[in-house]
Image (cartoon, rainbow, N blue to C red; front, side, top):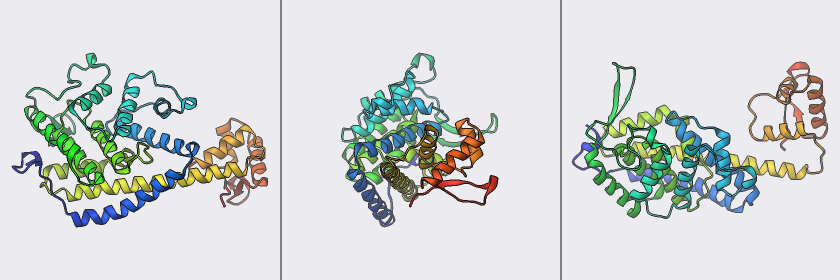
Length: 363
């Protein structure tokens, strides 16, 4: 039996003691993040928000098997953030739509979530409805066909979940929206419950996962009391995609006690906040580095590579890798590296010869 078939649906229950234990830790970490962010200048804060929102949009679509052009998304997000020097609106109507949906959700987090607002978001996700005859766009799903989440090859499909009949969707969504707009449950917990509740109703023909995560971002912005997103919950869900689908399936087939789902969800938020704290720390160190080295003369290759190292270059940086990235000779790469070592920007980390690698001197 699915949880929506329970006679007590949708009266969810959870163990407040277990949830509050995790909430205390999460709220402390969240307070650190928001406290640090309040002290950041626009030049430091904006790149962090830009990266987080771009990642959230990219990963939310990626979970559904939709791959977006990172540069186009980043450009549109930068434009929406008022960073016109870094971007312009995308010419891709879908990308522009998902960016606009995200910004409406987080910048207007205090506004009620209404049927019309959800329908507008849905239309933005499907800007060419004429090509999607099988999808009802900007309205609840229609018809008597059973809505199922399945996997596996044809003939060997596995049904993971079956949604309520479409005739029940309007009433179920009315209950959910009323709860979202009126409940006094902690917004972090509210985000977890609303996410599960929404995907269980599965109110649209398509796009339910993306809209569930959009609602999640709106409620997390409400929890943070700021429209600036410094962390990406979708990125953490994408990293634990199998866990995500497994815990959803277990929760949708279990009882109305959803403690385990809430704990899992809050754990992903906690990880996302911790990643954001590390990112801001690295951004601050990077800004401090360039300030302290503003009078040091570097060529274009050196500036590019130092920024690449600060932004999280993976692996060991050697002269051959430097040459390949910069399309220059190995001799030129070696001179660049030795010059940076002499200026106290890089340090050698391995034995001599071809095995020598370099990293930032970050003390």
